[in-house]
Image (cartoon, rainbow, N blue to C red; front, side, top):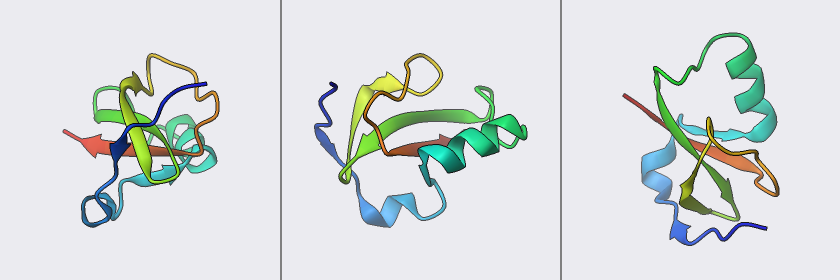
Length: 69
């Protein structure tokens, strides 16, 4: 189980907060790649900066917080 220790700023996330399912579908369709930016796994309005989505499995995460380049 991972620790989600950073509070998500609700004003920051607008179009960059995906459910795991939405994120995976967008990745599969080519809408998001590792060249586009970076993302962190999230749960309960918190995330962990050590859990980058292209390097780690989702485990118990429910969402992805995405940052475009």
